Amino acid sequence: MSGVSVDWHRARELAHAAGAAAARPARRLPLAGCDGATLAEALCAGTDLPAFRTCAVDGWAVRGAGPWRVVGRAAAGSAPPPLEADGTAVAVATGAPVPRGAAAVLRAEDTGRAGDGRITGRPPVRAQWRERAEEASAGDVLVPGGVDVTPAVLGLAAAGGHDTLPVRVAPAARGLVFGDELVGRGPAGGHLLRDALGPALPGWLARLGARHAAPPPQPLPDTPGAHRAALRAALAEADVVCTTGGTADGPADHVRAALATLGAAPVVDRVAVRPGHPMLLAAVPGVAAGGPRFVVALPGNPLAAVAGLLTLAGPLVSGLRGRPPAPCGNLAVDSAVAGAAGRTRLVPATVDPATGAARPAAHTGPAMLRGLAAATGLLVVPPGGVAAGGRADFLPLPLWPGAGA
Image (cartoon, rainbow, N blue to C red; front, top):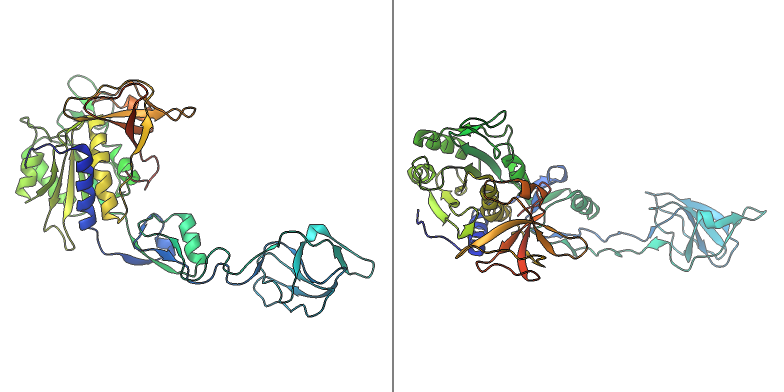
């Protein structure tokens, strides 16, 4: 491991590039199995949308001036009789084809009946139908590649005539928590601390776009053997393994040595950032066919670990899924924020809904989670800090599963 700190923005670029280079081939899956996956290529319309002139209301298709004599019915899913003479009407349902020869469609609620049964009413100014190809023509790009498949995308794919989609599924992830000082249940006390990362890791990884199997990880011993064994077992199952603790240079920090025994190649080793400086990303070859697997090693302090997740794991997973990394916004800051000499500083913050300015949270020490729990993103503060009213990059937190970072 090199030990040379990488600029924070560059670290994110390197993590994303490593994931993109190792992205597995796309798989074509039935629509029912695509929710939450990422489109591997653009979704194009397989047919005109709509495929024919389609009634937008229940009512009457009419020809010529009224009143109109009823000559038939057009039901959804069936071919309607044509209107061949002025003064005639066909009953139509929403979604039915508009009969050939129709000049207008009248809403049912806007019509009446004459004494002889003919339809009366005034044709509307706006056509009450959807023109063929009004939404898209066959071959049009509906959704670009690299977009996550949502229920809305699934519905659009089905409307466009697709039964399957080429997608990249979420990579499998595992969490490992190292620390002799940690307990997995009950309150902290004496010389022991409650593990705050094990319960949180699965949710963070899901929000970054990975799949984490239950149950949450439990604290493991700070020994070289425990590190090696746990990493080997996790890498046999997962594309991405996220560890917490053991990344510094103390006597109980064994992650780097364990990775060396596995032949891991560093992608990013230490980042010029606070909190989270000793984070690292390594590629482990030869674990499975199809490319390397990855270890994202995070500090043990909770906020520092989350900073590392958003810095390295988020862009890595986005690359593996074939999607771009989550972009940073740039916001005004409503109060001065101190920098960290020679390093980027990540500060939990909220956005004032009235002004759109970022507001730094309180309680943002590297071991604290109170500020993060109230935050909606991280201010990316340059080494020189930001003055009140100045601007800084803002990385939104992934608040929903699959949202990415």
